[in-house]
Length: 213
Length: 213
Image 1: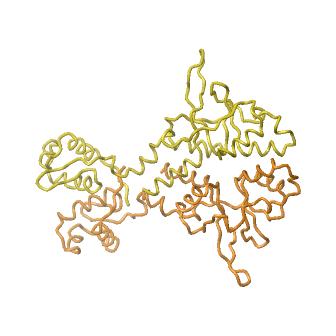
Image 2: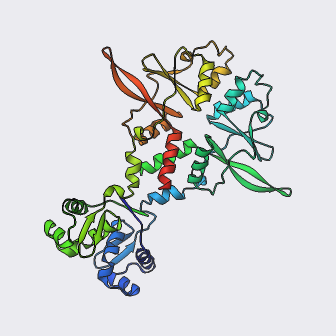
Image 3: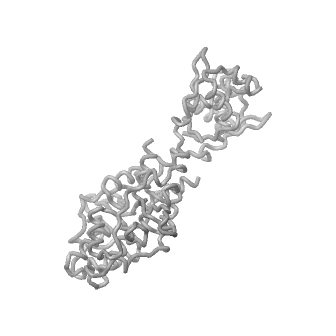
């Protein structure tokens, strides 16, 4: 397998075929003001890659660039919205013990801490919870708000961000997952409402999906 | 970007150029027993993709298929050895408390449990350790061997396995990381010696590396 970048003339040919399919190579050449011979290798590439379909004595059809395996674009253009999971959230006053139960039931690596209107206040990971349990206090009485990492020290993404950006933040900040937030207006201020979760698991699944295609 | 699969004639052309570079299209056509016109689109594809380099009045050179961005192959052919990390290991008699300290110091999600000759006996995750700490026992006295997941219930890979296989196992078995093992002979039996660790972090980093190219 080899990857190529289409040149401008090839992109123009695609537009012409899209508009006037079926169209013969003579007609395409006339529209571009070049000879048929000039187009031969461009048309060969476009049919080999499956972007165009050639039928003898009829002409070229557009089969759709979307059907072509655009692997590079597939990786670069995937957004957080495409692969994010449901967030697991508790409020600040939840006990460390109840938060641990929650993390077991939902089988996630991190829980997001929110206020009553779903505004992001912080995050706790399994590691934070493990630290709290060996700390010696009564985990039934300690509220999770006391041990969480607080905003604005929590790294976030929006659902329109790319998966590549999310992966970068996860690796740079050495976390398992990050909250996906959306800015909403509350009274006269803008707050970050939690709408999702993106984790290394989501990215590993995407890696597999890309490899399987 | 578009991905194409080279056809047999294109692969033959690559072999011919490799052997007799620089070589003109006339000579290639003669060797393949076809006309120059027949080869035109194949040569266009091979130069566009950067596999061949064409110099006017000299002929075609082989620039190396390795230099071409073989994205699909890059994903599929990566082996565990290419991206694995150092394993973090303790013996079965280590206390749960000391194992937790170990997990904090090395900042990993799972610790592998081994015997004196590095044979894999089991694995414990942050989740297992968290469960043990809220269980009520004295974690300074409970040996990690008591709470670990035991072989043969531990999923493993070898360093020659592909990253795709490792990712599949991580997702299917819902674990954060898996031990990389190597079969070695001890006395008259074959044992699995731990030689590495592959995690969702390694795979997320690989995803980023591929996206950045």
